[in-house]
Length: 68
Length: 286
Image 1: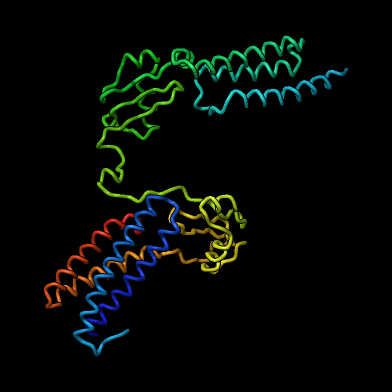
Image 2: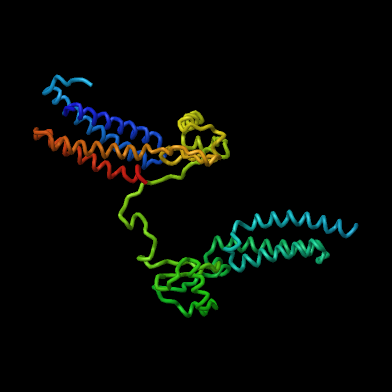
């Protein structure tokens, strides 16, 4: 597996985490719990953005592995 | 009028009167009564019986005694609510029996309590060793309350420096196979959501004895048929595991890459994920 596809996999997992966190931030009825999930959600989002930027570089370097 | 009819009528009417009076007199637990309250309840009961079985012939006199006692009780109770002095006068004050780990012999004598009785009361509070007790106080109800020395107290999460997730009370939404609508709407959910959750577990409503929704909105069910094993939701544990996986992936990419700016990026994001895991741990793992 190339680095690019590995990074893609990690991004996919992180997106899964993000959506589960989002689900819990909606589902929970304790305010404290809700805000913790929401904060974590935002942080995960930042990490995904960083990785996606890196992925663009990788795809530029190895155009043959472009796309999912 | 035949005697038995009279007794019957008196008993029935007094039954309801005593019921009403005890309701008015309050919700005190029988084991937590101060002597004054205890005697008051007794007097009401005895007066009622005496009137019922005709030992007090004159109904008016009987009821007068009963009414006077109840009125005084209620008035004193009300005054005790308003004034600390009267409260102490009626109920007495609590007595400190052990202070700074030392038994106060004078207080024991004042309460006419022997050493054995003190030790017995301590044992009922799970303090078998006198050396473990920092402070003990005899409440006005005769109950002994004990504060253990701080190194003998049960450990709490704050002692261990651990963060735990705040939990609100769970709502019981299914009881005996029936959906309870009020608690369900209290947490902003409806029957449609519950139907989906039950279907997800592969169950039917009439098989569920108790269903509770916890503060993070997960449904826990107990079935009538205990032979059936149902999968308990492991979403949170799975979420934590994938967080761990991502974090280690990022560390790995950081080690593998030659590009120094990419290395920094991976490293900082790996650290961010680590912080995130620390924060979420009390919520996701329990």
